[in-house]
Image 1 (cartoon, rainbow, N blue to C red):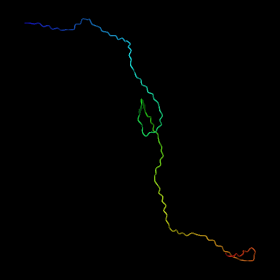
Image 2 (image 1 turned 90 degrees about the vertical axis):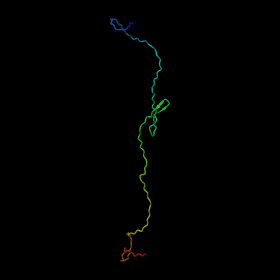
Image 3 (image 1 turned 90 degrees about the horizontal axis):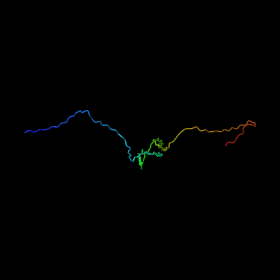
Image 4 (image 1 turned 180 degrees about the vertical axis):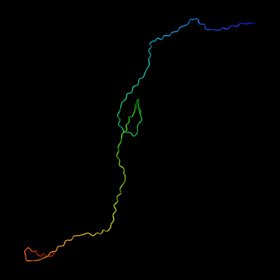
Length: 127
């Protein structure tokens, strides 16, 4: 018995004819709707003039961000410091003091004489 079989294959044959493809783009207006947000910042300078011990952090008060603006200031302070103390105590001592000092003594001597003249001194009585 014999049997026949068929095999089918393809091949490319250049016939000189082809297909040309071209493309064009056109625009059509289309309306779209979208909700957009635009944020802006309102900046206010608020004078505080408050002395603090340390720098405070930024904080929120509702929707408002509060940013402290700091400056360093020089503080001159005068204080008293006890450097030392003087403790003064009265000490009384008794002692004998000897010293020779000159003293003045006046002596008066009265002499009487009479030579017979009127301007001669007169004798004075002794006291």
